[in-house]
Length: 179
Image (cartoon, rainbow, N blue to C red; front, side, top):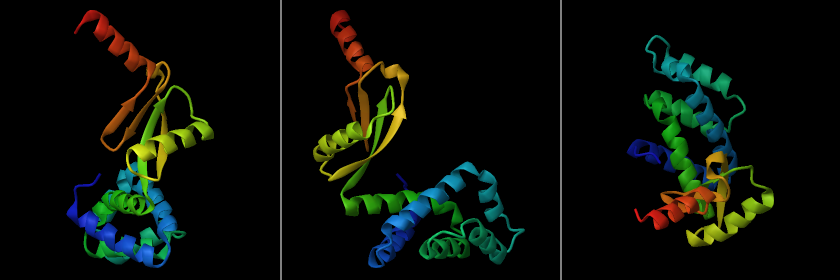
C-alpha cells in the first residue's frame, strides 16, 4: 500500500478516533468514496493545491462536496488542508483500510474469473483462503478476465493462487516441451 510515513500517522490517528467512537465502518465507507473522487478528478487536487484559493475557501469547497461525510473525515480533511498535506488523502485512505482490516481480521483479495462470482462462490473462496493467510475473512473484489478460459486466479497481498485453465495449460505446455 502506501509508503508514506505521514499518511500512516494520520490514518492511525483517525483509526484510533474511529475505534474509540465505534465509527470504523462509516469512516471507511466515506474515505472510500472520497478516494474515488480524488482519483477520478485530478482538477480537484490541482484546485486544492492552488495558492490562489484561501484555505478557508478550500475548506468550504470540501465541506460542500462531502457534506454527508462523517464529522471525523471532514475534520481530517480540514486538518490536511491546514498542514498542506491534502495530497496524502488517497494514501491515508489506503492506510486506514489496512488498519481497519487488520483489526477485523480481514484481508483484501482480488479474484480474477471469467464471469462474475455468485455470492456462494465468493463466500466459499473467502472461507478457504482466509484460513490460509491467517485471517477470518476476505473482502473480495471480483475482476472479470476472459483470458483465464476457466477457473480463478486469486491475489491476496503479494500471494497469488492460480487455478485458472490458462495457467494449467501453460504448465502442461512447459512439461511437454520441457522449457
